[in-house]
Image (tube, rainbow, N blue to C red):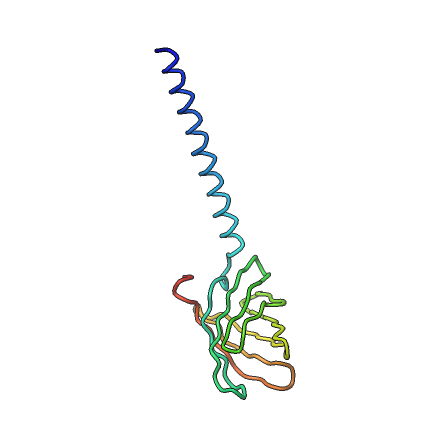
Length: 138
């Protein structure tokens, strides 16, 4: 009888330790993911570029933000690319994208949860763009 009680206590301690360890690991991973995705421009943005030779082009920005450093990627009907360099400082976003045949620069200001600004690919094309945060990232 003592042996059975002792084994029950040992099992209870082992299971409790495992549950606490899993809970701590879950909290740590969710903390680190929220830190890497924190900031006002972090998330998925549904955007439209205006003024190019192909007319209005819808595109999606996937942005992570850590203080002033911004990383992520862009996806459009013209293809996908990683953001090569970007910053968000004093309410202003600047993104550089190496699109293969052209390097794009997007600048924008954040007002009332929306981005709007200018884009260019050097001296060839220029235009305006705007973006609104996707409902799934709010």
